[in-house]
Image (cartoon, rainbow, N blue to C red; front, side, top):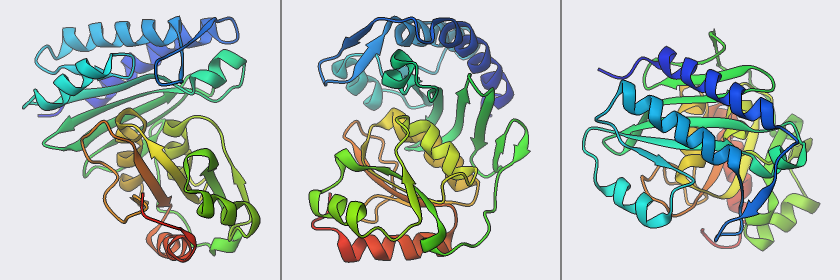
Length: 267
């Protein structure tokens, strides 16, 4: 039996509201070994969520973004009964800069796939969640299916800096969509796509904690996602994965075909 997703929702709502809302715009940042930003709020949220999850489900270990890579690798190969994957504060640079776009993301991985996903945006009080085979919801309301829309009428979520150069150039100068946004939180990008706020999406490299919950939420809402190579996004590994996604199958096929015609080399 899977953990109760509503209990998970309550945990994320409480801790994210306590920690992120109280510290928003009033934080000092550090730069980690990989060049990304971290704050004490990231660390406190991870510590608190790990502690509460351990109280409820002591047999399921947690892999968090703020662990060192050696710990993460060890956790990834060890568990047989499941593994929590946590991004305690996705969009840390936004958070530390006073930009209102960040969230907490938690997924449960079993047998090399995500089976539960919960992503909470404390500023908007929006909780996106999904259970494998049971659909996706936003604050209790069912997400999807998305209406049909031509690619030329879409808003795209685009992360330019991690894309292959020729493809990024084409997206900048000969884009096939109506407009694009780059918001600074991969986990929330997935959710906004699932909710139809974006209709297509591309990202050159997301980590396990960036995509685990969001990929599940999108697919359970009726969306589609692969890597640039056409592989499933979820791979159960720490190496970054590219993302090509859309809110429905017809739009995904059109979007992916345009990318295939305009990309240089596989990821």
